[in-house]
Image 1 (tube, rainbow, N blue to C red):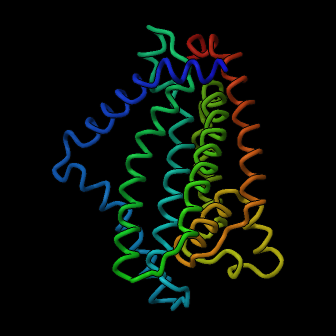
Image 2 (image 1 turned 90 degrees about the vertical axis):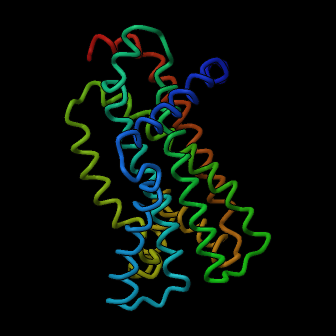
Amino acid sequence: MNFFKALKKYWSFAVYAAKADLQEEVANSYLNWLWWILEPMSSMLVYVLIFGIVFKTDEAYFPIFVFIGITVWDYFSRCVTSSVDLIRNNQHIISRIYIPKYILLIQRMLVLCFKMLISWGLVALLMLAYKVPVGVNLLYMIPNLIVFFVFCFACSLYFLHFGVYVSDLSRLVAIVLNLMFYMTGIFFNIQKGFPAPFGYLFQRINPVAHLIFCMRKSLLYNEIPSRIMLCIWLVISLLLAAGGIRLINKNENNYVKMI
């Protein structure tokens, strides 16, 4: 309940700060907001060229297949990476006024959500261009995204906390994310990419891989994702988030002293 009260109280601050970050990000750039389109598009083109043409994949709607993976992975990796140094980077704020530290994380997630929204718009345009048949199962994107956001928030809470005490945690996180990138099926079908039963297991036990798989099923193939697995990962994410919030509330008075 305290979390929701704080969220209501500081929501306007998080939105205002997110807008300021977005404006600052493009203030000194020649292409301004166009970079938010060019970055994911260029990544998609590279993987489509390498795996779609050179290695000749037979995956249907491969450019959209890759773009969905890039969109989801990019949000997750940036959310986790930025959370490690979030307290240190906002030292000028937390040393002057009190603010629940997870509000800073929510503010960062709002910035990434805006960029992700642009990427989903590009996915929609690609689906129109490739004439992808859609149906009512498209609505499963909503629970998929809810579970995904809760999971990202939960994971980032712990990196936010331990990033205060471990100065080189960002390097370790970069190594783990680099390994995880190739185990998540960004540019290939993870069930087909590994011999049975490992592909099936990797797709189930890796939450990011599973959510990408579910989003592709509902968007590209008009299929129903595993509702049981979505519920399982939602419960796990909520428990992790509750533990992370409690951990931060318990230790946030020490953050200013550590940095």
